[in-house]
Length: 132
View 1 (cartoon, helix red, strand yellow):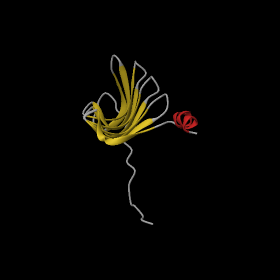
View 2 (cartoon, rainbow, N blue to C red; view 1 turned 45 degrees about the vertical axis):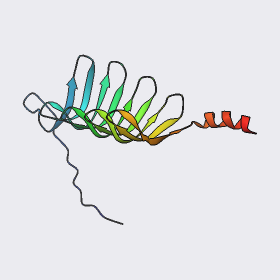
View 3 (cartoon, rainbow, N blue to C red; view 1 turned 90 degrees about the vertical axis):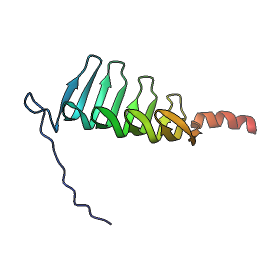
View 4 (cartoon, helix red, strand yellow; view 1 turned 135 degrees about the vertical axis):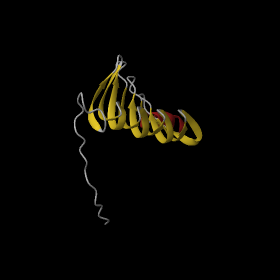
């Protein structure tokens, strides 16, 4: 067992005079953000909700999705994994609303050849009945 000595840092609330290294809300015409803010931009951990009902929960850097996060589409699909410059980049899994998923490496928003599709249990049972 390894003991980590970490300190939990609570950022102060943002207000009219404090807009750096604080927590608060940012409102846009088609979205709103709740979370950590620095230099008037999303920075740290936070949640963005769009008018389209899409949502992102995760890490931010200078107003861009950067690091680990989850993006939820209003269709029911979701992506869990790494982001860079607001694109799916690194390791991640895309879950389809109808079942099944694709896990592997993403490069600038696109799947690479380094991944695999995983069928939903219903899809497997559908195919197995014809193999008997």
